[in-house]
Amino acid sequence: MSVNRLWAFPVALLVLVLVVGSPESQAKSGTPITACGQLVTTSAFLTRSLYCSGSAGVVVGASGITVDLKGFTLQGDGSFRFGIDDDSGFDRLTVKNGVLRGFHRGIDAANGADELSVSGVVVSGNVGLGLYVSGDSASIASTTVSGNGGGGMTLAGDSATIVSSTFVDNVSPGVFVLGDSASFTSTAALANTGQGILVFGNGASVRSSTASGNRDSGIQVSGNGASVKSSTLSGNTGYGVDVEGDSASIASSSATGNGLEGIWIFGDTTVIKANQADANGFSGSASDGAGLGIDVVNGSFTVPPIGTNSVHGNDDPAECSPAWLC
Image (tube, rainbow, N blue to C red; front, side, top):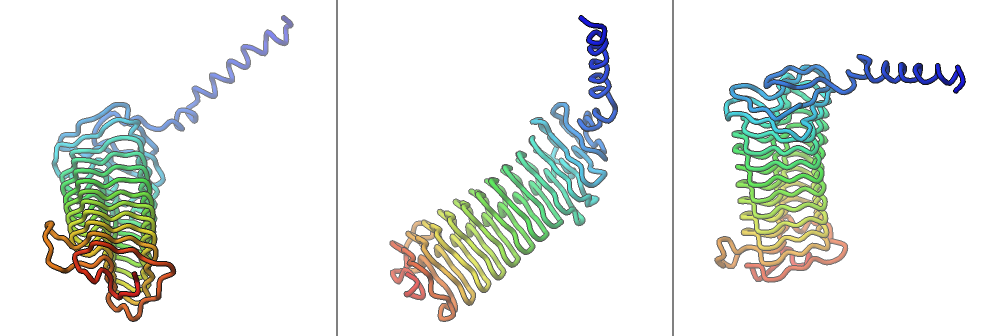
């Protein structure tokens, strides 16, 4: 082996050691979270599951950081503490990959905490809300919110995005959004004791989603420009879809077996097309002759649908109002 080649090997090894072991490279891996109530001001990660008695799980102390639960569980003792505590309102917080349970709130992002991102998290069995968010542009993805005592999620802010997430068996609504331009895609709201999805705001959009078995309406929106498409609303105690606002569009969706009417709209310039609404209106399995498949109040102002709607076996034999919708 030449002298040059003999020198090349230790030099290359030294460079590798310096890169891997440098403070800069270590910082990129984040700060280990080793105790409950730890204040984090850089991206951080759990090293093990923690039981937090009388303490928050993690306290957020800066904007733009990630809390990676690494598949572990943060568990509270039911006291008024939060699993992820961003009550100071730091923006661009990311929470991912783990379980939050047994706190008063699993995640509390309050006081204008914009651009919260939650992904791959199970938020279950919290005494109050699973998630509370006060801020714009929140993103909730691939997350399960279940069995929380004060509701699945309450979100006050515009432009929220909920994708591929499940809200099941929560007390009160599965999801409550107070804000404009909320978007739900591939979302499931199941067996909640209130509405499955409840929105107060304009421009709400629900796509390819399911709201079933809720003890109120499957989807309830108060605001203009609501859109529900390619979704399933079944077995809810109230309406399948309940919209109060103008310029609503309900398309290619199925509303079956709901206790009140399948699709109920109060508003002008509504478009209803290619929906199926069967066997609605039998509240408590009893027939009282009331309960249409589709009912649009102010129907004389409704834009005629492109295509047809199908209604069968609803408790009100009229099936549809106005009749030309079906």
